Image (cartoon, rainbow over all chains, first blue to last red; front, side, top):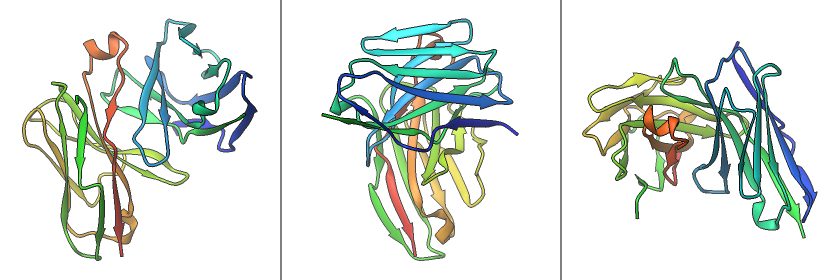
Length: 112
Length: 117
């Protein structure tokens, strides 16, 4: 069956360190992979999109990698800040379907 | 402010009651979606509308109906609410195709918290 897996345990790191979140998927052939941020009581907010033919994408302190052989994406936040504390969602878009499928998300807690 | 607007923000229903969740977007997007979010389950697609005049079932459509009223509005109806439909409901919109290729994602509303007792 198709599955998108993100670490359900919260990731706790200290301010200034790099946070790395993992997204693994099985039985998908995604053309695009996206990352979203969700704060409590709010809707997800789009952060980054990476295409299947791209290995890495950067935006300010954010970096996403996409390895279609390993079926894995890594999401990095460098120089993390307490304001980065949130739940981060991985999502896949298969060009065969006009819809996005989400992982369950990983909660990030950045301590001062 | 551009975005996706959902109403109501909170709702409590009794089992068997019906209601409609409203969603409107002002970004001229072609595609709209309804998701529900439950603890430990993540976001699951209920229904989607790839373009005005079309609707399709998602992963968990049972117990729901939708209407794409026009390009801006996409409503979700619960005909006979059940406790299993207690959840947070999110509406989203996107410009599939050119938008995705240009690197844009989905825009979500702030959600409707629904409790069925």
